[in-house]
Image (cartoon, rainbow, N blue to C red; front, side):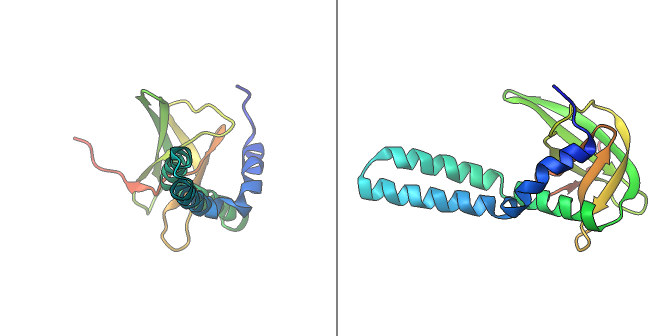
Amino acid sequence: MRTLSIEQQVALLRPTMKFAAHMHTWLMVGAALCAIAAVFLWNPIPLMFSFFLAIVGFSEQLAGPNIVKAISAIDCDTPSQGEVTIYTTLWDTGICYHAIVREPLYFEWEYEFIPQGWQPVARSYPAKIWRDNVTKLPVIAVVEGGILIPRYEPEPVKKRN
């Protein structure tokens, strides 16, 4: 796998900003239209498409808006310095990547991310971290080699015993 620079990784996401925030809505509309078609045609095939579109729409309802927030933050805001620890979990469908974001004066946050154009290694990295101006949740972290955008809303780190 060829590793892309940070600038190239961000550039790959810029074109998606026009539709990413509302992609889950379009998937749900498509699911509803397929369900209506299944009823009118009395055919189960559109219903299968409906289930597929609904599942994808529900599962990715935060991914698109998170990409928009991340790219907007990089363009407009100033990052703070912190640390990100990357770890992986192995599922039957593949590897899931997780990040724990640490900064002075903030809680520790944890989220799942999908690496785009780089291969993360499980360890701690110095990072530049951008936060949402309203919620103060991390919206993007940049570490050596790649960007980390939350797939879902970040959660506070639970203390492990």
